[in-house]
Length: 460
Image 1 (cartoon, rainbow, N blue to C red):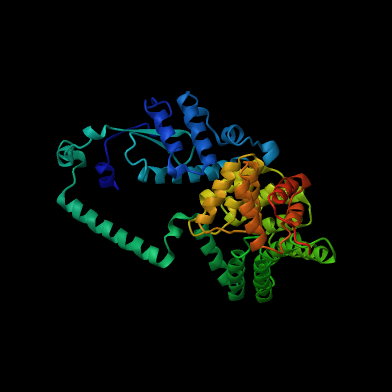
Image 2: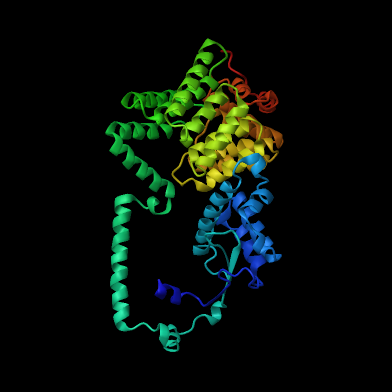
């Protein structure tokens, strides 16, 4: 590590010194970060970074606290949001990773680097020397500083140690996979699985089955997919009736099937079954984030919107980086008419998901954008989702119809409406939307544009 540090460009750093002068190019460095691909679709992180850098540049760096960020950036206070600093801590970790990625790629030649060191939120500014002056002879530099000169013996020993470290890292990657090194959630999950195995192989088998089924839940508006997932969750319950995940998953899928069912005895039965499963999951493991999230979904399916929002917020606080929980929270916020919150949650989830994830966060974001009047953004978000192979559903296409209609692109709106009619001829999307939203006016906003674009609701 000492050798690596010496081989970097010479720097002038304000390490741990918030009173150090702010480098002259800091504002430009911040602008470069804001416009970079590394920070695309990361509005929350950009707001966070812009706030702390601006505070530091205006001489208020010592006053930056989690509480002030929560209040000034996110508009959250302890009086209304429980522990508002929790989201700040999570975003700070994400921001550090995002900055590291930026400086390893697009910002590798930046003359001013901005860091948010662990243990605080006040930015540290690193001024790299002029690259033209940095190409000095490293050997001569060592000769001028005998206190840090490296002898041949130390280089050999250091090389052997480095070799063992590399071998160890390769072995770790082979055995555990690269994500475990970077993802605390995976480490936690592996420890949980070890504990389950020690309790009972049946518990671990049930957990694995439930986890696989959980990945099948989205897209929501696929009844076949929901029934398939429900079968796996029911099997997990049979394998280990004492494992809460089977009941949590069953609560979610039964709730979704209730939402997709027309009013009548069948819908009422599904709503009741969903709540029964949620209550059993709570009884077995009340502090589990998935249990809280699944219960929030069951409450939503039973049209208890306020309770659904409360429980989703709790689940998110318990597991801020769980993509499935973010999807549920975002969907419920959308249905409740909290479109700005839905967009923030979706952007957060998108920034955390891997390239292989097929989550519906961009679909939620696009619909939130539509209701926020950002019709171009809604269409571009759905275009990107399609290119990435993310879920396509009748609701997605209905947003494409509506956003195109709102922009006056009637030919395109009619094309999307025709595709919706042809691909899902028996899906009463108008009725589904009416059951999805708390306020009928939000469903009507889409439904009238669908009808005006030529889409017709199925008779049966």
